[in-house]
Length: 177
Image (cartoon, rainbow, N blue to C red; front, side, top):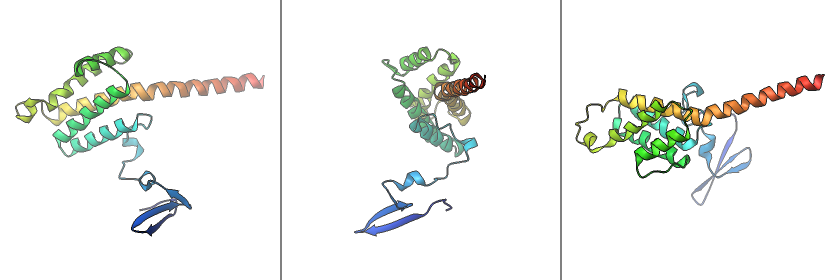
């Protein structure tokens, strides 16, 4: 392991205490890089962590063709999104439709695709009689989910950042006159 800081470990009464630069750490895990791929392959950190982790886990399962785990993580990510976005409804379909209304600027086809994640963990799947139970169908759901997450969490922040940059440039010009 390579680190740009010194980690000190002290053990007292069978309890480990970690220090970095003489600061006590409650949680050393946040300082250690755990096999995350390079930033090119990771999900933007402006997307809430719980959603990033579930999508990443789903993609990892999908790469290994663990379709049950991949679909479970994808479905959990969608449910977490619905909770984070505070959408209501009596069932999954109604909640997705409410999310679609809330984000009417996002292509509605994306939300229609998300409606199918529930099919991947239905009784048909457990009986292995659903003909669409394959990685291609799950992949389209994951890519669609990632596109929605980018539209909800990343694009608005990019707009704010661009606006701020333009305002700073404008202010510099006005000050120089």
